[in-house]
Length: 62
Image (cartoon, rainbow, N blue to C red; front, side, top):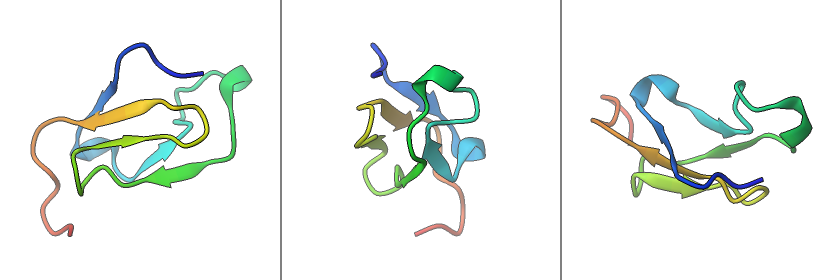
């Protein structure tokens, strides 16, 4: 199920995968890793949840 507003995360939340550990059991789907470092955001291909990176990107990542 998609979120009504983007899920905000920080460098501490990386690597990002959906569903997250905080997701309800009923909303689980196969785990997919998402790259938010290229554009600052990513959308899950399964549930359409949008994730947005806030703050600085982690040091040493491409």
